[in-house]
Length: 119
Image (spheres, rainbow, N blue to C red):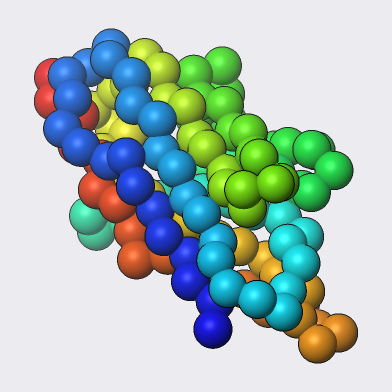
């Protein structure tokens, strides 16, 4: 059984920072990539940033220079450091883990953590 668990969301004021964490637990898998997506009310889920096992990263234009993604392979954990938060960053943030299990790549999602940025 694989579990993906996020933490670190909350309510902050514009300009403040938050750090999200996501840990994958279970057995019988290796992690290829992990990433963060977000979904604001009335909008589609969008990619925020992802990082491969080798450390290659990519992020959305809207967060570049403010957010950074990192990972600790030994802990099966990915982090999203969010600085200079804006009200438009308000959303539910979901962690995605792309795992290799039994020879196939499978996507797993966390339950989401809410980030609210007040102006």
